[in-house]
Length: 435
Image (cartoon, rainbow, N blue to C red; front, side, top):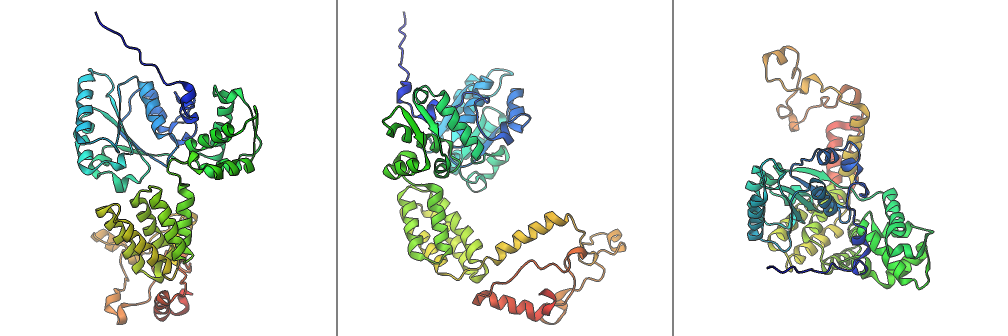
């Protein structure tokens, strides 16, 4: 004798729209055509029935978890899920032991899906290495953070990296239309999408946020007939900002305001937006990375020490975490906001990239080529090169650009006090030949 217990499934009425509309197969999956469209790399592996370990990197709400579940369903292989927020090394080892017991000869390895893998500590990531290398499990990791910073190199080298993009406007419109036409609850209402700009703007390419906004707006309307306009969307979101963002923050709007306040030399506003992110539960390392970027992009050569301080703040936050991490973040924020600004290096590299793409692979002038062999020396490599340290002020005029580009100007100084010194030095060395 044995007893069978039936556990009731959650009522569909109690599920949020984003969960009710979660795709069950690739035919229902919207976006990421570069990965799962016809002939794309992941699609080919899935269709072949064999996949290797990989990490999905992309912003929230673009389908990372959903894609992992679809793959498991398609391959009909055991699927284990761990959250890096709540799991420890012990949990990882238990799952690996289960996977070893459930793996049969010639069958696909069980899939271990780790959400927010960037939150795993080094020891937790180390505990995965052997199982991934031996094929005990096929690892699928999902992260919103750059794996180069957050995933240990040995594990990253054993995984392919696939980048997911924010959904395009066409994808978002398709998702909205599918929701109102196929969802069991929404299709009972007469919903008209008269305007969609506000919903698309607030959701920022995040499918889950988009569906949360749609659900909020529809539920707020008493009438069976619902006409969605930009004005209605803005009004509903202002009344209930928590309903469409789990942290109560418009993630990308807040970070944009933070960076623009630093760029605009307003330390008060910059500190305010920093506080909003801290109170909203933002990852401190995300804030610190943005400060490093701002130090390079917005302060630049007007105050080169800004990069040193921003990088020191990043290291400090990485070491001490919250709540003390707010102090080095605030210090770097005020320093960057009050520093003089220059984006000459930022503009310079963008112009150089544009020239490279336009002009192709221009040959390196012979006199500045490397000549490690006798044959290269006979061909004239390095011939005529002038060693600057042999000349007064460690400088001598000679051509460094390719012949076809020798008259191109790429870096244009912006005359802040610090950068003016660099400009005057270049003027003294090169004269007007660099003008």
